[in-house]
Length: 116
Length: 117
Image (cartoon, rainbow over all chains, first blue to last red; front, side):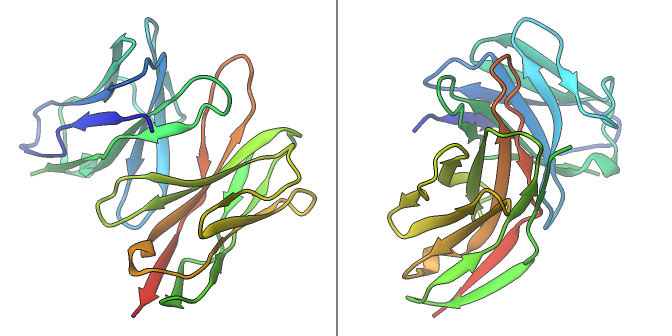
């Protein structure tokens, strides 16, 4: 199946710093990627849809200036958590749909962010 | 708005036995896709099985099968001959068929499956 690589898998940072998370589709092109946030023992909540070459579409309640998304190429989307605070600590997951037919989403392995 | 409901927060099954996980959804669309994803302790989301709404035949993937009842908006997952490796969080997901663009998934709240040796 298609492979989506997400890096880093874990990051610990101090409050006030910015953290960048990368999501790469390794063997297919993805004009669209999705960013999710998952709290412990909860479901995946869609944060935003990343669109190659255009602005991301954010879900209601998600701060655009807090969670910066850049989809610079057909294989790479980045999520930057700016001025991170402890409440931003969470598990972040990206996914990319394989175009054609069912557009099944393939997921990265996730990034655990801990803000001290 | 579409919603996905998983009413079983946790289920247990004896190894080699069969278990069924429930999922119901609400939509006004006539064509859509339904998925079951597995999230083991590693947190990697893995596609288990998928169903296209226009297909009446229930999808099957080895030990995994679904019971898709379109009129009842029900999409349950049956795991036969349960194995220890099946222990995970299982999420039901819905996606509308949108020819012009977005492929957003809507996830249920998940069911944690424990497999007892």
